[in-house]
Amino acid sequence: MLTLITLFPFLSAAIMLLFCVLVIRRFFKLRALHLLFWGIGLFMFSIASFAEAYLSLVWSPWAFFGWYFFGAALNAAWIGHGTMYLLFPPIRVAPWTALLILGSVVALTLMLQVMPLLDQNRFTAGMPISKQYSSIMPPVHNGAIIRMATPIFNVYGVITLVGGALWSSYLYYSKRVLRNRMVGNLLIAAGVLLISFAGVLTRIGFGTWLYLGELLAAGLMFSGFLVTGRGAPIASTKISKPLSR
View 1 (cartoon, rainbow, N blue to C red):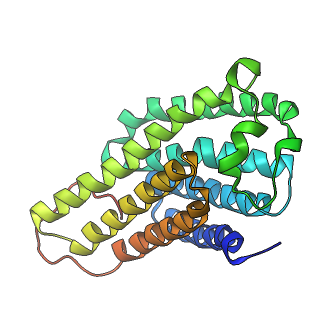
View 2 (cartoon, rainbow, N blue to C red):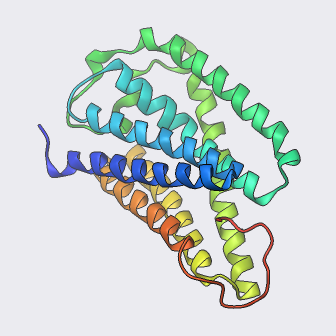
């Protein structure tokens, strides 16, 4: 049954899909690699959000695949990797790109291996999937090796995205240029931190707040993207390697 709470992930998915389209359009205009990786990561976020919304109503193994693989595992790392391309020369980021792609292929293999082992009898409609997935998936020693890879992708994503946003905001503030981008980057960082905090709350038993947290996080990140593209420099001082272009 669709309620106000279960409507939240659908709204989050719609916001992130719009966000994704705008970023990809900007990539085709500017041909900047950071926009490509942000766009791919945001598309993964959209898939995961729609899958999560679907799983709030009914079970589907492939919706679970979309939620866990694109959401719980990969999207933060791909979005964060885009920030790496923004902050460092491409030649320095290229080896990490190869590792990210290779790691994603390995994760895909591990995810496909665990699919036949999912226990759909443990699924409860109306409960956030992030609150019950650990009982649906087997433990690591019974075949769910993908669980060991997920924290690696997430830690990399949070460090690069939040760290990059805060660092570039500090540069904008210290050089007194492009204040709109400073504010926008802080909004993006706040969105990432909020969704991470919502995930922590879910793991300690407050799963009801997850959908609202994801919706607010999506709104913050999208607002940050819009703010960074608005306004003009307030000083002639140049700043190197800003977070957003």
